[in-house]
Amino acid sequence: MSETDVDTDADTDARSGAVAPTADEALHTTLEMPFEDAVPFVQIEHELGDFETVRVTRLDAMIEGMLGHDDVERTALIVVCHPEIARDALSIDPTLAGMLPCTTLVYEREGDDRVHVHHVSATKAIRDLGCAPADAGGAVDDLVEKTGELMTVVWENIEEHGHSEQSA
Image 1 (cartoon, rainbow, N blue to C red):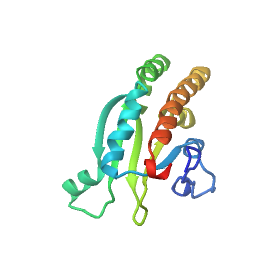
Image 2 (cartoon, rainbow, N blue to C red):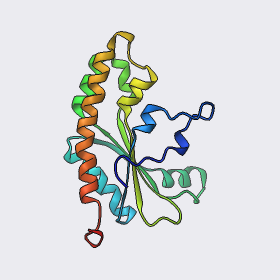
Image 3 (cartoon, rainbow, N blue to C red):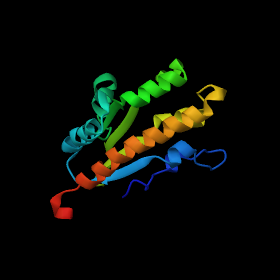
Image 4 (cartoon, rainbow, N blue to C red):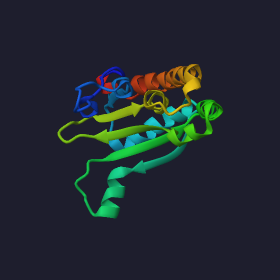
């Protein structure tokens, strides 16, 4: 799958059948490596793009530990923030920091031997949810554009380096 392949079934608005722009523009790819290797690989690719890792959380482990449910497929959140994105969001309105940082999801699906990587843009969510002041339209558009440029580099590297040599 490429970065333009998106699983939007869950993102479809049940009332209208329309897909929200943020979900429609989400990045998705698959990796041909073990899950335990994929999580640090995706984290490092973000860091090489100057995103700082805020936290890596294993949702499956958290759910099992707190709720006792061990039936959740392996799922990790890689929470990152880029200093330019944070600075620009704060300059638009300090409350926008509540919509940061960016999160990339790494997960497995039953019966699928690939590891999935999915990213929904926090800055596009800011734009589409109308979280910024009404007079900040141009600045928000610039923020979305900058985020897209930075994340595109990360995503291209994930796709280029995320497959085993046997599949090349």
